[in-house]
Length: 479
Image 1 (cartoon, rainbow, N blue to C red):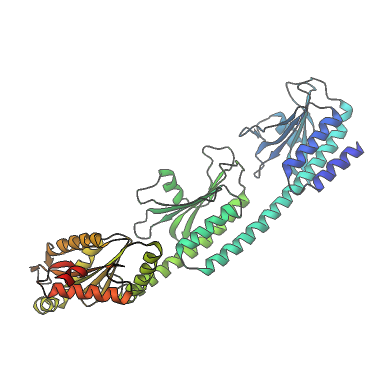
Image 2: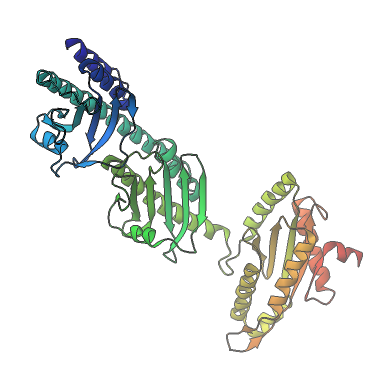
């Protein structure tokens, strides 16, 4: 017996935190020494409510656990009686063939060690009970030591991850990079199966985006403007973090509403639905700390985006400004050259705009400028860049668009502007026309300045040939 206890103790001591492996070895030792048919360990959950099978070993080898089946400690089973009374109990219904022994450590309940001879129906020897109590006590201390080690290791890992995430937050103010870094760490560094972040739109207050990553390392960003499930909607407005246990008897899904001060920002959900590894209150506390960091960083990133947008947009029209236009044109030319894609440019000018201002006043002129800008924005794609070039001139960058495609867009804009009725400050209605020049990279020019110059040349060719039209630079040259 002394050698058995020494072996069991040594196995726990040098287990390297692998609780399943050491239990498998030590339960096999019990079967060999006492000639049992089966040995099993059931562990208490963090809330000291349920006993769940952790490892089952038989004379025929290991068995799978019983999945979601568990024993409630207050429902009078042989397991709960042994645990609550703190002494061995012969299992009811199988007289003297099976015994449950409580495992404790420093008066803390750990779980139940169950030994039986169900297959052979050999009675448990009373002379073995004293030795079995010593074994159960050793199991209790050994398991508690591993759990404590695992908890400390997880805490250090989580604190280290929080530090890394904090450094990542400090390195950028781009919201997309911040969010990917945060939820990526939950899966890659902490080992959760999946992390999902649902963001509320600042203006509409509805879920606008879902960013997720799973154990395969797959990132997904989904536009959620079409709506989310009622469950997600309800969790978004919960007052505190919790586990979603409607369909599961263990904590496989944890959620944390994200809010900045009193303002709702989003919802963070973490789950272990694939590995079925239950999460603990410590996991939830950590995710809550991360969500508090996220709330502040998201707010700061959004503020930065608003300030940045103000610096690159024209205050009257809402279009990009002259400086940003040239920066983006540089980028788009580089991209077009790298991927051998077409790129086109439209230069637009409102016809006789000075006369219009002299007739109706500058306030009416501002109405025309803002309305024309809105019409342009409605008729271009999200990847296109419309900028106020100066005065009443507007320029549009059309990535991945050849000359024919650009002319179609120009004609559509022209039609929508010339058919629009503009209501002036004195309630009069007016119509306007515009002239447009169109160029294409690399056919018309390969240098940025040359491309803009030729679009301008085409524009003024239209101005001197009747206005109210869109022409390609190459057509103007031929004519």
